[in-house]
Length: 556
Image 1 (cartoon, rainbow, N blue to C red):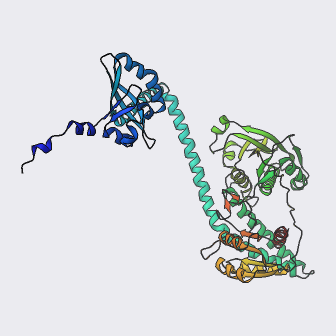
Image 2: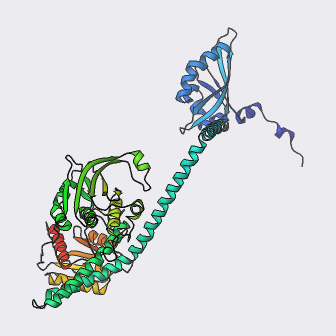
């Protein structure tokens, strides 16, 4: 096939318009009088909007425009040309287009400027290459400098790296141990506490209905109740150590809390141990679960008492403290530097050696004789403080006594009043016929709860799962309180049920109960705001107090 040679000939105009570079001509004042299609395509503008209507300098970025006015124009006027000038064009869509410009000034016979001819090359790839080259050079220089520093301090860095690796491995081992214990306790706590609630409930039922003259049976029931309390305490301490107990943190005046515990501590310590409290003036406020903090101080006091069998002195001291960066860097566990409220419990007892101190917070570790302790008291303290974002430190010497320091983070910027400690033995309060919907998937536990609430004077409706509960809820608008387990069968837990009930009837009080929950109403170990919880196992009196309080607050 023969091609027409004429079709292969391109005109000068075609070459100008489709050239791989931008061509344009301007008057001396910068007004564009001609531009090729390549340039127009680059900047995204139409010819009729540019030629005769725009100045070249108007298409430049701010920095390029300043350079054009102050350097490029005088240079062009002086020598008649400029080559390889880099700047950015501003396109119609706001993009910056890097270009390289060559400019020539055409003059008339009298030497007056007539036209500026400008050739532009797209420098996008070149600019990218230059940046990559510069970055590579900087990285090479940085690597060279780092290698130089490494060689200068190689031995020191090796020692530091080994120490950090050992610290990380120790922290990992501790985390894995905590996770293993947490999985164990979490797996058994829910079912175990359900069973304990049933046992506690039935023992209390027997106690209430036994004749007054049945002393032997009353003693047997009391012994059984004591055993269930100890079992519940064991479960609670395991959950505390594994940091899986639901905490309800509130602003705390630690001085007030310690002062309020004085009588309880003196009764616990006995006559041969002298109690002294040293409370700091101007003590900061902290935020923690007040019940758990009280239990932690009581546990430390009991351990101190057992370390002073022949008597001694127990000192509880409070102070404002700061943990600096150097201190926390040396710890195996992550502790933020900053301001803390310190509670220190010191005794003059037997003390302990280094090997004992390294294991003292581990669960089931005890130096007491068999049957004298569970080895969970100090582990509960450790778990509670760590779950509260605090820190525990122990100091001890054989024959010199022991000091255990609890650091709780300082509370800043809260106007909420410090929490008041609830009564240890809540007053028995009865209902006045209010209707309560009980949702519990464990039949025996549901039966006990229903009987207890009816015995307290409430009208009770029951459901075995959330879907059944919603059907009952629609049929009974007189329901005044939803009392639900958190962990339910049937694909819908207690939190989801509560959310749906609140959507249908906003403001209805909801009381949760659970033996263990990880993330339904508790997140990061803390009870979600607005949630109300009674933990299993609960007693008849605790149930009466909590339900009455919820109904009274909901009606107010």
